[in-house]
Every structure is written in C-alpha cells, then in structure tokens.
Length: 224
Image 1 (spheres, rainbow, N blue to C red):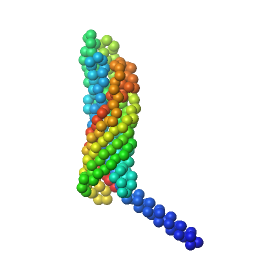
Image 2 (image 1 turned 60 degrees about the horizontal axis):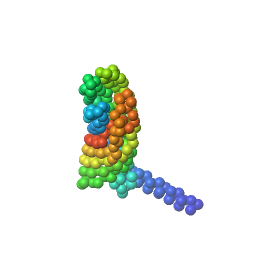
Image 3 (image 1 turned 90 degrees about the horizontal axis):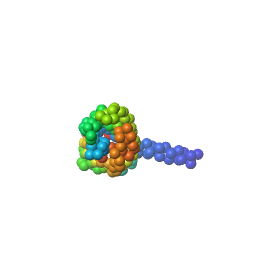
Image 4 (image 1 turned 30 degrees about the horizontal axis):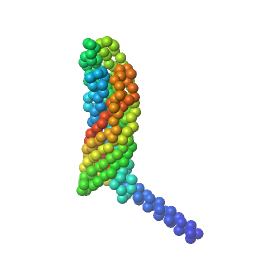
C-alpha cells in the first residue's frame, strides 16, 4: 500500500512537472503580408516576360522546442496572390503576342525551424530555415496575330529550401506579448528554363523556372 502511494505521488509529481514545462513554453501566432516577384522566362527568342510584383497574406505558427532553447518549430501558409504577365509586342514577322490577360498565381505552405537571438528585452533577431511547397499557376487568356486566342491553366508544386532573416519588436500587452516585425527570405535552389515552349505547352520545368527567388514581409502577432 505504501509503495502504491509513493508510485502515485511520483506519477502525480511527474504530470505536474510536465504540465508546468508545457506551460512555460512560448508560442507565437503571426499574420504576415509578403511581397515577391515570380522569375522571368523566355516566351520567344529574345522575348522575356516577368510578371509584376505581387503581395499575399499568410499565417505562421511558432512554438518553442524546449524551455531552455532558442529554437522554435514553424508551420506557415501563404494564401494565393496573383500578378499579370506584361508582354504585348511583336515577337517576329508581324506576330504580336499578348499575354497581359494571363496571371501568375502563387502560394505555398511551409515547415521549418527558427533560432531567435534576444537583442535586449524588446527585440529578437531570427534565423530561419524552412521547406516551402510552392504552387505556381499561370491562368488566363493570351493571343497572337498568327495563332489566335488561347487559354492557359497550368500549375506545378515545387518543394525547396528557403532561408529567412527576421527582426521582431516585442511589447507586453496584458497577458500576452504583441509582436511587430519584418523579414527577408531567399530561395536556396533555382530551376533554370531549358527550352522555349508555347504557352499552350507550358511544361513542369518551365513552370518551376517561374518560381520566385526572394521574398520580403512585414508581420504582426502575439506571443503567449
């Protein structure tokens, strides 16, 4: 009976300690607005098109891995945004190609880790490594003088590593901490276009060549 009581006491103490450890872990939820630009590709010999800049909203969840660690796990999603392609010109022999009614849609989800370095009590500097599963989707209509009007709705998913640097400003507001920040990101891999293909035959390799190589974002959220 005494052994059972001791065992129950140890289990209870362990449960309380675990709960306390969980309660001590810091979590963050931030909403961000991210600007980027998809990369340019050749539509014809000497004719390169790069869609305009685009900005999309997203949400990121972060959680401290251990109470004594500066490492955090991260899970994020960027909702779809779009930008128009810009080519409307003679691509040779009087053949005018107009792709200005085609939009490049872009979105992703990501998983990764971040290392936060306190710069005083109110500022954190962060270094982040993540894998982004990016979706690139040109969609719309296009026309050419010799080929008439066509439609495109092609898409690919591209999973690759990204690195980000962030700077947070923290302000205590009641039981939570408000966070304002900015960050810059860069892709660690880039696909190069191999062939010039018609809009109607846009292949996976060409679509991946459209993927952006940089991003910049501002965000706001809470730490609890």
